Image 1: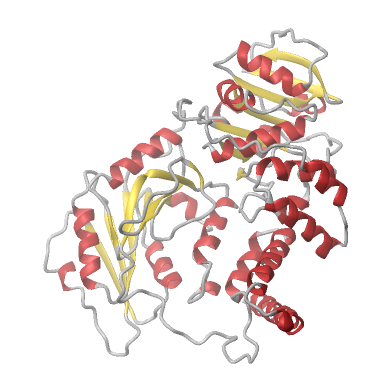
Image 2: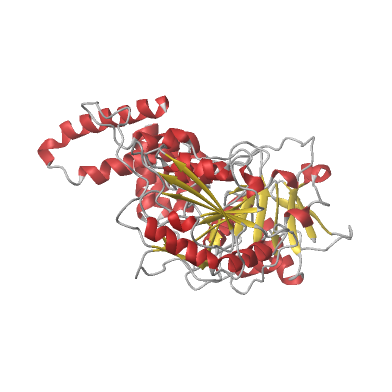
Length: 510
């Protein structure tokens, strides 16, 4: 391990993990020193730390926190990031509103403290400029790397208690526009400009024009596949798995799911089925649960209360094994699904993961293992211990957004969701049955129907920044505006605002 201490945008000293001094050229920028060290020590993790935080650096804990090579950890003492709230105007992802109290997935890095492996630093760093602004360099490095499968986190445990206050480094509008131009599609600098104009009454024309002189840093030819991944953590100890399946009116499809589970090379311990039928006096139609022998224990709950959130919560309350497979009643998969899942857990040391979830004949677009911005309640695996304070939000029952909310609860509890493209589940999207039944929502009697759905608004208000919500509003406005005639623009604008306000009102009621 090599540790670079810096102060006033210059390297103060470089030491090895044996506290031996490492000589570097004093005139080089911090980023250039890191790049030099990545070539000099290609097998070592490289740590950066502000000199004022030297006594707070958790040097002994880094090996456990940084448990495989394809990671980048960082932590900023300031509650805000280098790029500020403005970055929310261009990215609608869970990685912007960072929970500073736990390990949280984000590419928003800080120069205060962090660690990256030399092999990753060299591979990505060789393709981008070693900026004199160290914070800009780190955020560019992580933004490019995350798309390629670099797992990036804000990690408060990099520092011990009694942390010194560090003056925050803030990007100005020129740096923000430049960053957006170099890491997003061109249209986003225009949207950033419009968001600042509409919501902050600013007119940043010069930063917009300045950004046009910079090239995009996304490297389609760059790959991190050559970086080996093997965690030093033991996450799957018992390797026992329970499967939960909510079902309603899909008897034949459910039978096929049970058949696929019975053929697994690594069998589940329990399959927990919550059968729903809202018809009064109805009884279970799943006779094959008892008149056929299965190589696992089946826990069957029959309820007249419909709803996916309730059904999954009922199932989760019955879990006994180390892991939970959140399955659906119209999935198909091969016999090595559970075995492959456990192999990936042993390789990456993850506590929550989601799979490729394709329909028949649908091409697979994403082929890189990376941090997922979504969570699928029908194709995910979660360690049971992660669910102590996590459940499906009943406020979102019969609406949309419960999957997003569940994934965000996991992330805000310190558990990232990793997407593994090699683990594949076929989603048949069965035309009959299903668990979304037509129910009367609180806002159904409104003459002016809310838009977007109040459940979607609820998720935005709960888990995203104000700037992300405002960007969503502006993009939605332009999408709907395209369908309107020019003469109808004033009426459309008035109605759009009313529908938005209605959605906001009912979201707060939820």
